[in-house]
Image 1 (cartoon, rainbow, N blue to C red):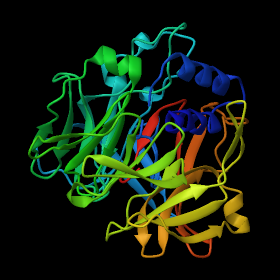
Image 2 (spheres, helix red, strand yellow):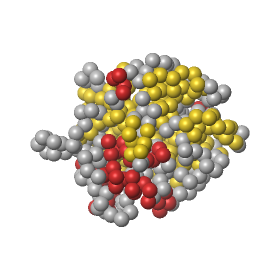
Image 3 (cartoon, rainbow, N blue to C red):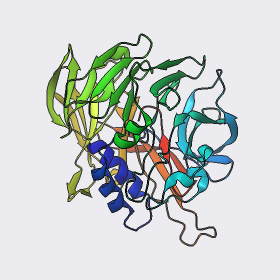
Image 4 (cartoon, rainbow, N blue to C red):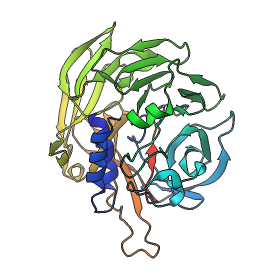
Length: 383
C-alpha cells in the first residue's frame, strides 16, 4: 500500500546517507504490509537517557521522567507514544532478536510528562532476519482527543482500545495472530473520540469497540479516516483514489490523495496534501499544495500552493484541524543529523509541527521536537 511505502520513506528521510531506503523499499516489496501509527500530527521526542526533552518554539523545555508500567487507570491524556530500541543501533541486515522484551516495548508519554511502558502493546517484530526484514512494528494509534489508545495485544491476539482515565479495555471480535501481523502488517485508524477503530490490510473493517459491531469495507478499499459516531468513513484504494463508505457501499469522490486529514468537526470537510511525485519508487517532488474537499458533494472547496517557507519542508504528514481554517502538518526537522562532529556519534533526529492555512498555504510553527536515537517509531494523536 502506498501509505506504507511513504512510512518507509519518512524513516529514510531521517536515516544515514546509505542504502537503507533502498533496502527498506525492497523489503516492502517482499512483504505486503501497512502502519498508521507513526504518521504524525506532531511528532515528539524520544531519548537515549531517562529523560525526554521537548523544545517549544519559545525555547521552553518540558522534562518527562521515565516511570514504569502504565497504571491500570487514572492516566492523564496522552501526548505521544514511541519506542527507540533503548538507544541501541538497529540494522535491518541483522536479526532483531538481540533486543530484549523491554527494548521492544512502546512507551506512552502523557500531557503532564509522565512516561510509562506498555508491555501489552506489541512493537518491534523480533522475528526479522537478514533475508526477511521490515523496519516497522506493531502499530499504536492515539485518538485526537488524547483519551484513548489503540494497539495490538499479543496476549489476546486481538487489537485493543484502552481508555486511559478509567482503564477500560475493549478488544476487537476478530483475532489476528502475531504471525499474520509480522507477515502482513496492519494499519490502524481511530475516530477522534476513540470509539471506532478501523483495521486495514488485505481487507478492511470498522469496529464499534463499545458494542463489538463489525462493519466490513468493500474489497479493494481501505479505511483512511472515521468521523465521530462512526461516520462518515473515508476510504481509498491501492491507487489512492478517495471514496466515502456509507450504507454498505463506496461512493468514489473522483479524487486521489496520499495524505488525508481528519474530518472537520461537522464531518463534511476533508483536507489533503497534493503534488508529490515519484520515479522508480523514489520521491522526486514532495507535497506543495493543500486541498479541501466537501465529502458530501465531492466539490473542491479550496486549493492553495504552499508559501515559500512551506516548500522547503520535507517528509510531510497531515493530521487534525487546528482551527476552522488550519490543519496540522509535520515535517522532518532540518536540524536532524546523524551525529557528524558529535562526541558520542549518536544521531539527532526530529520533527517540526505547523498549522497550515488551507486558504493561503501559509504555515505557522507550532513546536520542534528533537531526540537522540539510532532508530525507532513515534505516534501522535490524530496521525
